[in-house]
Image (tube, rainbow, N blue to C red; front, side):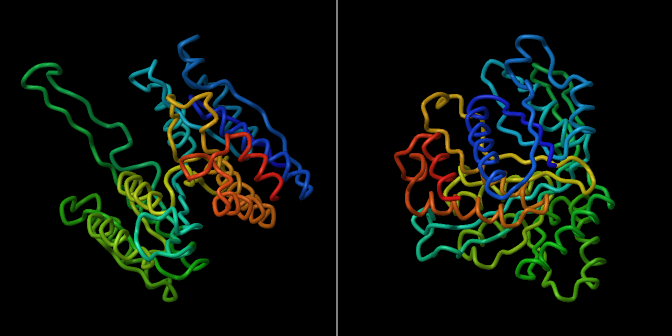
Length: 347
C-alpha cells in the first residue's frame, strides 16, 4: 500500500494534482497497485480563512502516516509575502530534511527545443539540487529598513555533511545513467561555501572510478547547456545554482510544463511536485498543463518499486507531446481534462 498525501496548493495546483490523481487511480487499477490517498486543505485559502499555514498536528500526520506527498503549486497574489508557501513548501523540505531535489530533463520532441539541430534525446540530464542549505535557509534580515541607509543580508550555508550526501547520491545516480557527473558552482567567487563541495568531490571521486566527474563554474555550465547540451548527464548544484540551472534545462525541452521533480531523504516521506508555479491568470481556463504533475507521479511510482507503471505513464506523456495531444503551451489545443483523458487511454 502506498499512502499518498495530496497537497494541491494554490492556483492551477488543484487542477494539475486532480489530473495526476485521475492518472494514479487509472494506473493503479491497470497494474494492480494498492494506493490510499487523502486531500489536505493547505494553502492560501486556508491561510486567508484561518491564519494557519502548517498546523503542527497536520505536519505530524504527513511525517508519520504517509509514504509520499503529491504537491501542486504555491503562490497567491492575495498573500504578497507568500508566507504560506514558505512555511508549507520550504518548511516541509527543511523539517523533513529532504536533501535531494531531483529534476530530470528529457527532450521528447525536437520541435519544442529552441536550439537548432537538436533531435529528440539530444537533451537528457538529471539535475540534482541540494535542497536544504545555501541561501534558501532564511538566515538574514535588514538593518535600518525603509531608510537610505538600509542594509540587507542573507547568509549562504554549506556543510560538509550536506556536500557528502549530495555527492554520494549523485555519483550513484551517474552510475545508473551514462556515467558522467558535473558539479556546477561559483567557487571562484564564493570560495568557502562552494569550495567545500569541490573539496568533497575530490575526496569522493576515487571511490567511483567508473564515473567521469568534473567541475564547472555555473556561468560556464549555463553557456554550455545551450551550446552543447548533449555533454550533460548528472548535473549537481547547491540550492540556488540547482534551482537556476534546472529552469534553464527545462527551457530546452519545452518549458516548465514538462518539468517534474522529487524531494527525498531515504527512509522518510518523499515529496513529488511539478516545478511550475500556480499561474493564477489561467485558473479555470482549461489551459493548465498537467504533464509535469503526471510525470512527477511517474517518479513516485518508480521510487516505490513500480517501474513498469512508471514507464507506462512516461510513455503516455511522451505520446501526448509528440502527437500534440496537449495544452496550448506545447502547441496543442486540448484542455487540461482532455490531456488527462488521453494519457489514461494511452496507458
